[in-house]
Image 1 (cartoon, helix red, strand yellow):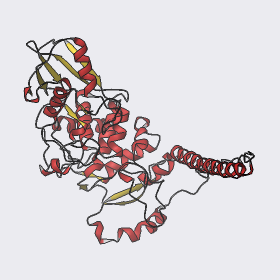
Image 2 (spheres, one colour):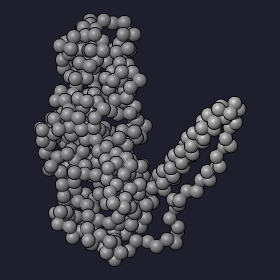
Image 3 (cartoon, helix red, strand yellow):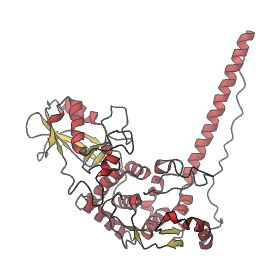
Image 4 (spheres, helix red, strand yellow):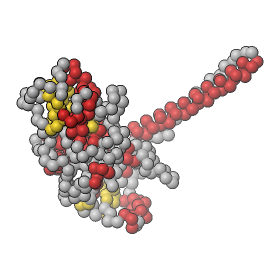
Length: 416
């Protein structure tokens, strides 16, 4: 209930928004009904040779049913929690289970089971990556993808700036990531610069180390979970830019260069890796959405590529190597500096896709309680980034069976 208690405390604004949406929907239905009445009445009047208009419907009074928890409301108790979750914990399908339930306001642990045991965390790792990003990065920070003049006439260099949200979709159409920059804007700026282009190099020198992490499975690229991590790519490497788990490319940076070539009318075979000359003249540049939007997309849809690129942003901010190792070390160092218990923590990536990662439930609980309580105000936006059961992101199709008691209320980070 660390998460559940935070959920109750943090959903107040969301509930109000949902209530307003529901009220707006009711008003819309009544409005349509009124228009139908007018249409039928006019048809009848036309037959009589006269025209009349039906009176407007009665106004709808807004009466939100969701209100803040009263100060004197009963607080969760350890016996009550144990009795409530006991039957679920007895389910053998849980396997080797560990967890913590805490009161988010007081931090009091109400239930725990092997909280110190390091477990394979999967995508709950993104809770740590988000906490580290909120601790050291500006929510307004953006990533710049630029094109500079090459070393000879007709040559330009596409320089990766760590943005995986660039898209080759036409102007006016969004790619997978809302607010992502467009290749066509780079092409327009290059044309406006007036220099002819017959060769495009792609500079991936911003990142260091391997492009696949320890514990990643090569087949996960074709399965749509990840792509080799390079500092420039289209729609997170998706071959179908509008499908979440679309198969991914094995050459994301070169694909971005080829997309720019196609937009400029350059032979895609004239695209290769290269390095931008020192102090090369910039001829075009586009920027990503701000970090706050990318964190929301990363947490909401459990986006592995966004997590890895944001991990490298953290590493560069901390003066570390922008690699898997540098990102993992920087996330750990940041959270340690914030006072979190990292006993047993082992990270090989920032997304949690590595089967070799380990995180104890106690660590995740402390971070979430810090975000929900008053202890770590910098982490508070994380609550807004979490998907909502039965409504958004990776929880859209969860908590929607049976009595739906969790739909609209539970906020959680999924991990599989």
